[in-house]
Length: 208
Image (cartoon, rainbow, N blue to C red; front, side, top):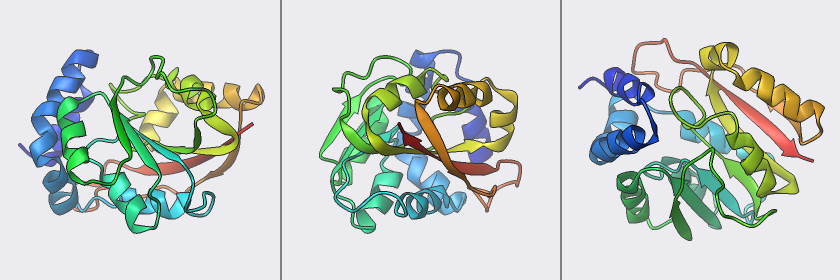
């Protein structure tokens, strides 16, 4: 299956169970598909952005850890106080093989995550806040478990941001002083070896 088809396949998941099952199926080929076949640069771009705001000893949650591609880059940049969560058991198994996370949790974005309030200095979430994945309500829980003054950093597909209900939700959270927009990057192609129809922008919010 072409990488583009695989991405569309998971985007079109009908429910959380199907999403988890499809990621379980993809887990063994995920790194090769994205990194080797797709030239995946999103992890590097996101971590370069994160490093401007969070010190190396920050406690960071990788929300939607997948196989640990973000964590691998974080670790290479000197971050070692890392935890991760994901809906897919198969993805979590692959992430565990990288030996970079202090803890990994099977949890569903949009539901209560079970962490104490103010648990993390920062949260990074890549490829999860998108079509057929985590809902806009995920932001409420991510804000709850992030310390005041901490950061939530995530890329969004530009078309998704413009057409989904995320745009309104993100603005409402800022108006209600739950978080403050610090920066939004220029758009870039996260998978430059593939067809250029997917673009990301990286959003940085500071929790109030």
